[in-house]
Every structure is written in structure tokens, then in C-alpha cells.
Length: 316
Image (tube, rainbow, N blue to C red; front, side, top):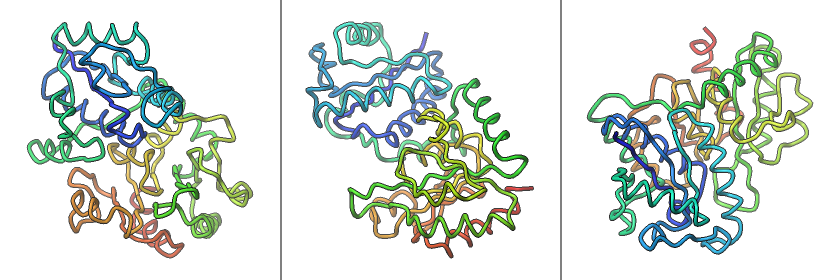
């Protein structure tokens, strides 16, 4: 039986949602390439422990105790996804022994272990995905489990009342400068302008701080207010008719999905890296129609123009 174990090295990946979703997409590709029947995901503070077989408590890993909390959140995401058969977090002896048993049993590792330890693999790049698309003309599309997707569709239908459901992630981390943080005033102006003339309902996802003014808009639902968490956010992105938001971890769910999206990236944020990923285009090579990454400021005018460019086709 072909079995693949995807190694998510928290030290080398940064332990972010975005890099985890890239790995999950790579594993779906490897499932096809290797004709694998089973896919496991292994979370490890530092992949070096897989050489020595010594469990490493996340609290003593790089970045401190926050890694333990991060690992719990990431495991919730992994377990929410369709196509993942097992999830292992190597922070105790039992979990490490399970993983070492998989390795000794001839389980294929992704990324390649030697390449990973030598620094030859980037968790933050879509290079492997773009290369697969160049060879095959397609990529597998990420999905949450059937049960979570059914819940998301029911939730959206109940709240949207027949209007187009739009998932929105306004990345907002004011503690970090130079990021693609959302211009909340612009997003509020844009969503407010849609409330009378556009048959759409906006679902704000994510745990980012949300301006109270958004809650006053009749065409807005703040998912967190209903107790929705990270696995639910990803399901809502997949189930919605359109995703709009900033380039962020949750946006990668849309990036590897099948629904239209409008993702904004501030032009001076990771400009060199984005040029490598997109070239001069406003979309990834593997993008479907109306899946666009816009390297521009998220002004109300830019949001409105981009929305109008896809609205008629999405709502049809």
C-alpha cells in the first residue's frame, strides 16, 4: 500500500495556516503522482527529531510556548480536511513512535527529508504546484470534509436569504507593520455601498479585530460572533460563491479551491516574491476563471471595480 507522510516542520515553515495549506495541496498532488492510498500529516517542531527519534515538546521549540497553541490549531485544520487519513503531532513519545513506525514501514515522505534538512524546500512557495500544473494542465482542489462543507452551505443559505454569499477576510494585524493589512475604512465603504443595489451578503471570517461599524450593516454577518472557528472559516470560504480579502493564510483555501476569488496584495509587500509567483499576471498559472490576485491597494474604488468585474458572472 502506497502511503505518504507530509512533514510540516514548524521551525522551517513558520507554523502558519498559509504554509500548511500549501503543504496540503502538495500532498494532494503527491497522492496522484504516487497513486497513494493513504496520506498522513506529521506536525513536528523541528524535523531533526525524526533523525534522533527524540520527542520535542512544542513549549521548548523555537518561538516558545506559542508553538504548542499553534500546533493545536493546525491539527484542527488538518482534521477538517478531506483526503487526510491521519494526523500526528510529534511532541510526545507516543506520537513520535507512531511516526517512526510509519517511516520504518517504508512510508514516502514529503517533502524529501534530505532536501528539507538541507534547506532546499520552501513551505511558502507554490513552485511544486505550478510545476505540476505545467505538466498536467490541472491541479487537485482543496476541500474540507463533506460534513463540514454541508454545514457551511446550510449556514450560508440560512443567513444570506437567497443572496450571493461572499466570504471576506480582512487581515488586520496592527502590531506588524509593512503587511497587507486591510484598510478597514475602505472595506466598510465598499460593503456599505453594496447593501441597497447588490443582492449579496458578506460573511466576515477570521479572528482579526473587526470594527463595530461592520456589525451594524444589514448585509454583513460576522462568523466569529456565531462561534465559528478556523475549520469553519475554511469551510465557508469553500462554500461561498465568491471570496474577497487580503493575501493571508485563509486566502490560500480560496487559492487552491474552485470558486472565484479577488485577493488583494499591497504592491510593496513581498514584491519580489510575488513577481516570482505571478510574473506580470494578475493570477496564478493554475487559477480558474475569475480567480485573481490583485497587487494594488484595497481602496474602496479598487474593491468596487474588481467586484463589478466578476459580479454578473458569479451571481448568474
